[in-house]
Structure formats: C-alpha cells, structure tokens
Image (tube, rainbow, N blue to C red; front, side, top):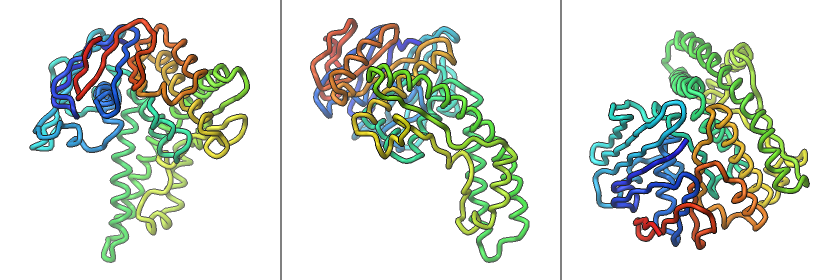
Length: 360
C-alpha cells in the first residue's frame, strides 16, 4: 500500500495544500497548532471513514468557508491505483464521496481501498480507558481488512438502533402487546450478526495478542510479557438466550443490555490487568505494540503493509522506545509529525506553518 498524493482544500486551518509523501519516510515538523495533525487526520479519514478527532463534519470546514474537500490517490497490489475524494457542504450539511470518479453513497463503502494504521498520544486510551475504546480499536482495524466484518458491523448497528427504539416504545402506557413479539424478530437478527462479529473479533485478538506480545517482549528485552483476550465470544444461540431471557430488565432499562456492543478486550502485563497495574510508560508501550501488531496483521490479511501514521509520538516515548520504533520502520511507508527537529531518516521533510506545508 502506498499513498501517492493527497490534496486539501479549506480543510481545518489548511486553505490549499498538496502532500506527495516519500515511498518510505515523510517527516512533518512545526510548532503546535500549525496544522500537522490536520494533515494526518485528512489522510486517515480515507482509511477509517471518519475523523479520529471529531464526530461533527462542520468542524472539518475551514473557519469562514462553506465547504471543504480532500482527494487522495493511492496504489495497492490487489486493486492497483485508486483515486478517492470527499467534499463537505456545510451550508446544506451534506457529504459527497467519489471513488475513481464514480459517486459513492456512503463513506464506509470506500473503506479497505486505502489502509492505514494511526498511532497518536490519544491511543493510550486503548489501554487505560473503558471497553468502548478497545472495541473501537478492533472495529476500525478489522473493517479495513475484512469487508464481511464491516458489513456485519453496520447491520448490527442498524438492528441495535431499531431494537432499542422498540424497547423504549414498549414502555409507553398504551403500547400494544404485539410490539414485544416484534422485539423477538430483531433479537434473532441481532444474535445472528453478533456471532459473526464476535467470532472474527476473537480470532483477530488472539493473533493480535501474539504479535503485540512479541513486540512488548522485544521492546523491553524480555522483561515484560503482554497478553490480550477477547471477552466474551458467544454463538448465536447463546446471544439469543441472553436477549430473550432478560427482556424484562431491558424493558426497564429501555435499551439492549447484551451483545457485542458490551464486550471488552482484556489487556494484561505480566499476568496483571494493564489498565490498573501498569505504569503510564508501560501502558504507552502496550499501545504502541498493539498498533505495530495491527500493521503486521493488516499485511497478513491483505498481503501488504498499510501506511503508518505517527502523530507526535516521538515526544511521548523514551529514548529506548523511540530508537526501537525508528529502527523497525524499514519496508513500510511512514508519515510522522513532531514538534522536534527532523529526525535523521532518509525521505522527505515538510515544515508546517499556519496550515501551509513547505517541502524542505
């Protein structure tokens, strides 16, 4: 996978800019608040289908403007060259996507054509925050490599919304009893998709745990051992049993209490819960190892490495971990940002000031 070119127009603080990354390493430097992270965010939108910093499209449009746009060209071994674009119309609150010139209804339909692994300081949340952060990590990683997973995840989300709406409707004083029978139909569909998602998550996390564990072991000279376990995969009948036998509790709560949207990934360090017992530095090492492992598994799934995006992570790492990261990026396309002077690596270097990237 290689990113060849990305163009920005009225995106965040960037009026007009073009980045043509080096096939290996591209360094983007500059002071805080100048637009370094905005450049990476624009790239990652094509991999994940959404911003990793905001859930509101209006925030992506440059202040004082009515629209914004991105276009990205990439090349991979399976599908060849691909040109994708997205434009946000702030006045009409719409988003328009295209792939190779053809309109695309949903941004999620472009996921998988360009694959990237992002590591930024906020990804410490994978280890130290609640289950939602870990589920999101697995969902984004798997969706880029497995179209069936992405499809099941979208179906599950839609079914869950419908089922929750029915649970709330059944709480109304004059709600017909037949609504509860309708819930059973949605429960059957939810359990079906849950089994697919849980099975794929479980397989992925087992393989990710092996790879991440190897990275942690290598990073610490064998002093620490990390492990990952998916909690808890079930088959369709087990999910359906939970959904049908606990309907009274769900009616009281007005939402679905059981399913893959409640599952977690247990992360351990030397047999102890990393969220509770690991130090900040150890948690950072685990998060980095998980991201490096994500790249390795992406290569296993697709046959080639994704693009690696490192957002201001060098300042977050001690000297040993920094050297470990920089020494292991050969054979991958890496784009990294930093407030520090450019590191001594072969490739291109840009300096960003006021949203304007200048090639050094």
